[in-house]
Structures are given as C-alpha cells and as structure tokens.
Amino acid sequence: MDPLFSTFDFAALLFIMAAAIGVLNERTIDLPRPIALLIGALLISGVLMMLSSLLPYDLDHRARLRLSHADLPKLLLDGILALLLFAASLHVDVVALRRRAVPIFVLASIGVFLATGLFGVGIYGVFAVAGVGVPLVWCLVLGAILAPTDAVAVDQLLKRVHMPGELRALISGESLFNDGAAVVLFFALLAAASGDPHALGNGRIAIEFVVGGVGAAMLGLGAGYFGAFVLRKTKEPTLSVIISLALVFGTYRGAAWLDISGPIAVVVAGLVFFHSGPAENKATAHRAALKDFWAIADDLVNTLLFLFMGFEILAVPFLSGGWLPILAAVPLALIVRFLSVSPPVLLERAPPGGRWPAIGVLTWTGLRGGISLALVLGLPEGPYRDALAAVCYAVVVFTVIVQGLTTPAVIRSLYRGDFRSP
Image 1 (cartoon, rainbow, N blue to C red):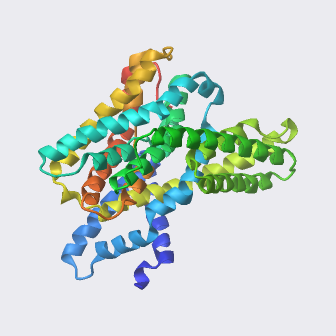
Image 2: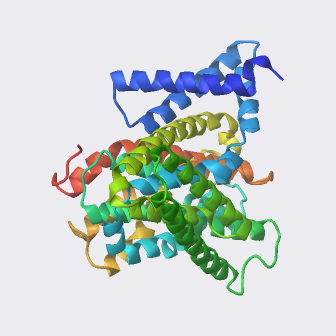
Image 3: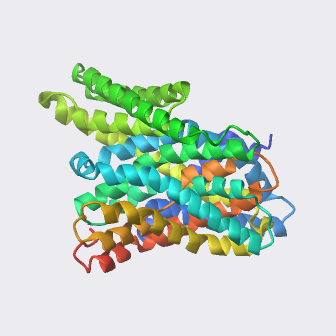
C-alpha cells in the first residue's frame, strides 16, 4: 500500500484540509460551512487532476483508489446516516411538526413516489434525445436516488434563515422522513432493473413501504421511550451521551435486522428521546450534555461527509453519457420538485404567509446530498452506472451550492422581507 495514502494519513489530510477551508472561509466569505467544504474539496480535486496531467506521479488516481477503499456508500448507509438523522432530530419543533403531520406524511411518501416517476420519465426522454440508450427502469432508479432531500444540508440552511415555524417544520420534517420511502423504492426498482421479475407488481412496493415504515416508527417509538426512561434513572450527565449513542446505533442496526426502515426508526427515536427527556431536576444538565455532544458530533460528521462528496468528483466519469443529460437534469429536477411538493400544500390548510410562497421555498430547499450520492455510487457495475452517476452528481452539486447559497435571498423575496436572515 502506498504510504502516502494510508488510511490514517488520508484521515489526517482530510482534517487538515477541513481546518484550512474552515478558517479561510470564516475569515473571508463566511459561507455555510458544509457548502464551503464542498466547494473547497471540488477545487482541490480540480488541482489534483491538473497536477496529475503535469507530473509523473498520478495524484488523482491514488486519491481515487483511497476513496474507493473508504467506500462512501457503505460508510454512509451503514452508520453515518444514523448519526446525522439523530442529530438533526434534536432541532425539530415537535409542536409545529404535529400541526403539519399530514402534509409531511404526504410529502415523504406520495411525494417521493411522484418525484421518482416524473424525474425517471423525464430523464429517460433526455437520454433518448442525447442518443444514450438507458432503459426506463434504470431511469426510475435514478429518480428514486434523487427523490429524497438531504436533511443535513437543509438543517444547516434553516439555522441561518428566519421563517414561519410551521413552514420550517414542514421542510425539516419532510427531509427527515422521506429517506425511508426513497430507500424502499430504490431497492425495489433496483431489483427490477437487475432482472427480478417479482420486484414490482402485486402491491409489493406499497406493502414494503407500509410494513417498513410503520414497523420502523413503532421500533423508534419504543426505543425512544425506553432511552428516555433509562435517562431518567441516571444522575451523571455525561452518561446521557453514552445512552444516546447506544440508542441511535441499537435502533438503526435493529431496524436493519428486522428489514425495516432504519432512517425512520432513528428519526422517531430521536424525536421521542430528545423531546420527552428526564425529570425536571435533571433536565438542564442532561440536555446540556446531549446538546453539546451532538452539536460537535454533527459538525465532525458533516465535515467528513461534505469533503467526501467534493472528492467523489474524482470517481465520477462525467463524459460517459454526454453533456446534454447533465445540463438538462438540473432544471428537470427543479420542475419535478415543484410538481411533487405542490399537491399536499395546495390541498392542506394554508401555512403562514400563503401557499405559493411555501411551495416556492419547498421547491428551492429541496437539496440533494450524501444519501443520493451514496445510493448512486453503490449501484452495481453495468453499462448505465456511469451515466446515472454523472447526472446524480451534477444535481447534488448544483442543489447544495447554488440553491443552498441563494436560499436566504429566495425566502426574503417570496416573503417580501418579512423574514430576515439572522
């Protein structure tokens, strides 16, 4: 193994780059840190590719090998996602979440199915025009990959923007819960695309969604209440951190063993655990310890995730499907997002500020991120994988950077300055 790219050295380089990018960003343009990390990693990747063409030492190839050994899809889906969703549930307004429970459920279920179908059919047409023969079922797989919004990136943005509490709960609630439906739909469509004749039809997806979703919610509810019960029996505030870690990993792995939705189980467990809490005389110390730890854990994991996302450009062959699908995917994703979020908002009670501004904000805050990238990079090798990965990466980068940076301005414009950035 090359000593310059051992696992330990690679981790050290990641933290050095994260610190450098963070300090530079803070002292200059002060972007949201996840976005700054993604941009910084993209720039460093570009430099590596240029140096590799000039020097005999193939830097980008060695970096690509190290990224493949890191196995981002497995790393994210088997552990990091649980930590991120659990940490994000700490910031949710449960009261506002209850008020908007119905539209959140529709957005996180029917909205995911609608987004998958619309994007899949649309990108199928784009591939056909570009002369790239990607079958419809594989385009639907890509639709499922891009259907979930990124709870982490959305949570980071909402911290920087003032908006109505119910609208904030609607956005964060959808981003927390839509992962479960998207992952169920993704694996069903992937099985069908891989040749399983029984993957679709006979209501199989609906059954898996209901069983997996309801079962996960019940598991999360029970685990969350049990964790809160154990917390009430403890006196040492730092022990609350160990209890929370046991809860998140135990719940996530338990859901995997039961073949139900781990993301939904962890989110429900986190909501119950963080918002039921210990007895009042212990609440302040316990909650302070939990808040401090999970703020640091969230920041560290986010740092590594967004750096990995930037460096994964080294592993994505952008020219495999031509430029037309990449260029068309971004406006298509925005149109599909608009069409998929509009029905539940139009049919439900109008949120503060009106329905159309809420639809506009939901459309623009539909950032895709780590889970979409992990799913597409985890696809099996085949003739369509590279084209799908290029389209997915383009949408992820555009939504995180462009939509992420312009979200405060979009919200101020839609709400006519009533809600300002803090």
